[in-house]
Length: 93
Image (cartoon, rainbow, N blue to C red; front, side, top):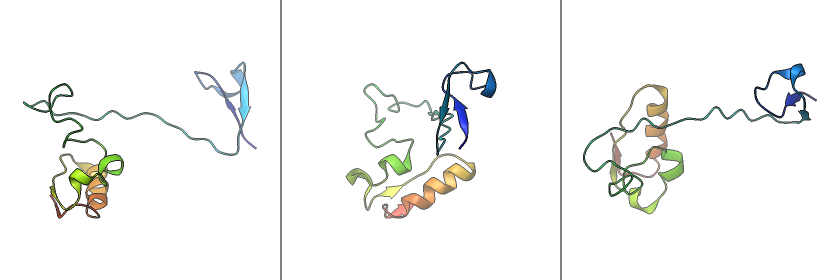
C-alpha cells in the first residue's frame, strides 16, 4: 500500500508525517476563467443565475433543462462540457 505525505510540500520520505491509503485523490484545483462583461459579475449579475462554469455541477438544474445553451471556451474541456449538456439542453452551441 502506498504511503503519502500528509502535509505540504508532499515530498515523500522527507515528510514528518505520512499517511497510508488505498486511494489517492490529487486535487490540483481549477479556477474558471470568467469573461468580464456587463451582467457577468457575481454581485448583482447573472453568475449562478444563468451563467455557470461547471456543466456537470449545474447542467441538470431546472433553469437549463430543455433550453438552448452555449458553451464559451475551447479545447477538450469545452468539448466535454458541451457533450454533457446535450443530455439536458434543447440545443448546445
